[in-house]
Image (cartoon, rainbow, N blue to C red):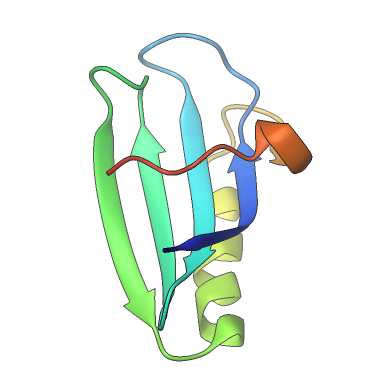
Length: 83
């Protein structure tokens, strides 16, 4: 079972502008990024051996998209990433 360590959302509603990034850990650290909404979004995945490597990619992804104001989501809002 994978553990959601962090989740970020760019604050934009809608299929075209929405961006989501998850940081998860199972055995290895995974970064999952989705561009678009839950139904039509494109999903990319990366795996890392260490948390600092994974967090470095999360920071690069957040910095690369200046279309919204990124918010970290915690608790119940930190939903599971796409399968």
